[in-house]
Image 1 (cartoon, helix red, strand yellow):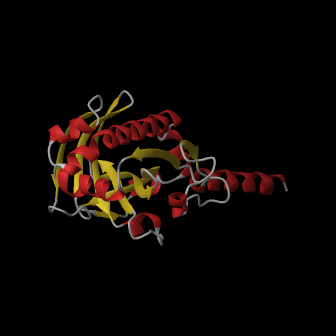
Image 2 (cartoon, one colour):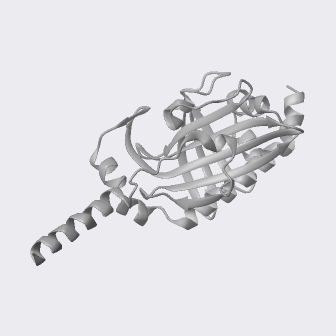
Image 3 (cartoon, rainbow, N blue to C red):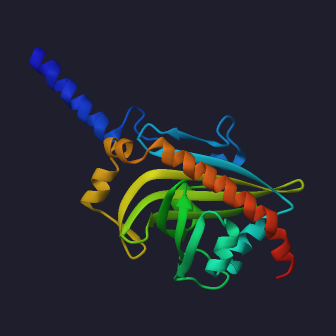
Length: 238
């Protein structure tokens, strides 16, 4: 009997290490675009070990269309990128970028998130690839991406910004999911041992820390607030 109990405890412990605490899932729904009371800005560890980061940025005088234009048309040079967040943005380039389009392009960046210099490859995808079925208004803009390492063929997270027009301007609701690991070939996520191990609950708890999630939350709010400050002017001059 004791052996059975011990064996069951070992199996349970292994299951939690791999899958996390019930309810094992933890991938949020796209309903954050409507606003989530109590979690408009903050961080939380999901049951599967992923850290979810949320940031709400008011953008007075801005429209959702302006933000879409900034990403798809205007943002072209390191000078543009540094203006966006002078204290944190260092360098940028594009891969597979078509003028006026964003889906399929990868934004290659060096930026400080907190005190750490991150070298990232941000691959923009259709919102459905990240959120599944999502209900957006005709004038909403969604900017979604898989985020990976620039110098290694590895994804490490996903993100979405949803920009919605409101009275007097727009609101940007941003979400990041840290700890979604996959090896990459070109723009495709492929099965690998790294992906299998990296997506266990234990690996996520060890590698993705609250300090990193909080630094990303602050970074997002700061850079989008700066963008809102000058975007109407450059959009008017286009």
